[in-house]
Length: 147
Image: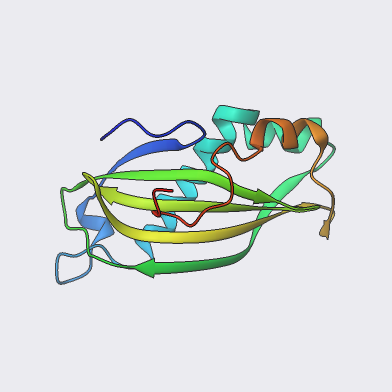
């Protein structure tokens, strides 16, 4: 696993038998779990536990509103994957996260994820305290573009 760029969170994930389909390749929905872990660890590292955020910010939590995934190449059982996550842009009540799942330096999966900040089932503006820690460091860019 190579060192990520500033503003990018990296999470190592080993592929287990339970993550694969009958062909031995990673089942497409398993990548959703891997990327959820990456987003959770990004938030944990920058803003603390989501359960603490929920409690301290009077019920604030995050929901995935939209996800676009591009599956380029398959991963296999026992592969060590690198899930990279970063904030691409922020808007009023949402943040757009970019994610890549890599094996070595090779990008296997790219995703764009829109996460909404909600309270009591309604979208709310991201608190300034979260905006400061989650602000994009890499600028607006496509996942895996390297620019």
